[in-house]
Length: 219
Image (cartoon, rainbow, N blue to C red; front, top):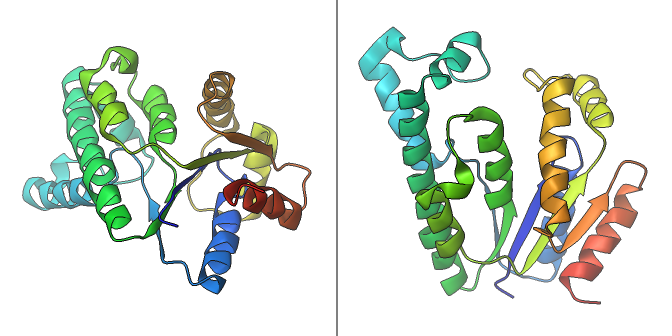
């Protein structure tokens, strides 16, 4: 099979549930697969580098996660630019090299988030970076393998927010942030960045998976 199957979307739209169902389906068919979660600035090598710097610089770096110190740090143009460059280089390493190696060995990749999810993240957090004119972003688009199947799952920001509260998540975005995220996602959907778009707000989980399965297997 060795496909690249991409799942994108706003938080609490059901990505993890559908990925788990797909994993079970592929396992039944004895298809080798690898689930890879990715987010610009949070990839493995970059995380290692940040942890190393936290040890070296001690209290000079803000703690990971959402906090005011971190927000203030990213408002500095020099800091956000360095963070963006390093984050993008590691993202390109992951997509252009690691993803392709898995496919060479006949392994299907289930990407939990991919390029356009990172685009949304960066548009939200790196206000000083013009992504559309960024050479690194263009390079990432050019070098990253094209998805064989790309799926975006979405719900309204209000439902997304309520589900996060119901799940008692320790850290989650405010309703306003989710609304801004969804605005960017919808703009990308208008430009057909995914091959299938599924509103999961009022759909049964199994019905959604049936849609996804039919799409993946080309039925």
